[in-house]
Picture 1 (cartoon, rainbow, N blue to C red):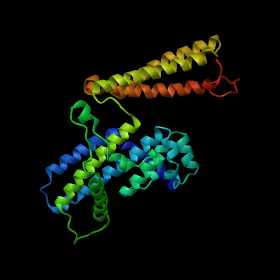
Picture 2: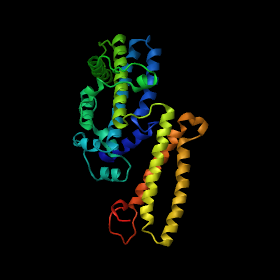
Picture 3: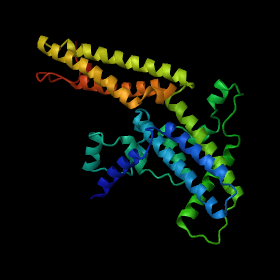
Length: 326
């Protein structure tokens, strides 16, 4: 098996080991359990305390690989900005085939290949993709939930950003020592681990707020508002599908039009059934059910739009429907 083939398989396996598909959904669950474990085990011996820096950096690296993927796969300008980070990735036919066949995304490929084993790596890569200084942006980012929902005064998440960055860099160093050296004569103090823990959590939360506002500026914060926004986005996407379908229908003869309408009726049934399946049981889903349903349905509608746009009669030599006269 070739090295390239291994990379494609690794990306697929990484995807399967995640509960959610985006960095902003994965991070809170992982951090919550890690913080609980740290609070419950502060009084344990030094050997067990050593492994919290390892877990912290696992969160940091895993989170930022997902962030890189999410940014690039969201499209421009991040896709173009990723050219430099992607320049070290070796491309051969297996990779091109995997991307073309949508087995992996461009974002997954770049995120899997970039080096982020130090804070400097993260800053350089994110600054390049975002086309702005990443760490500088973190210095002023605020917690929208604390201000808009809880009514707290506007204040940066990072009170002392330089100290936080230094602690994060130190956590990377501790992880390296613990993972790659026996270091039997090296004492790792609980006080230092506690400080690094607090700084890494603050760093991740500030980063998550910054990326969220970059990708979804002013996004709704409460579950009700998120459900409403998701429903509106789904409605807009369905309207786009209807407009695209009309362009195609104007080019069909009577028999083709009948067949297309039948296919659309069946497709709508499939879309609803698939979204229901993804969202699961309404009782178990609770108030988040409409959000999950709308997200699954919107993704399916978007794929249908692309199918309709790409379709053309065999006699047509022009491009997709958006480029043809109706």
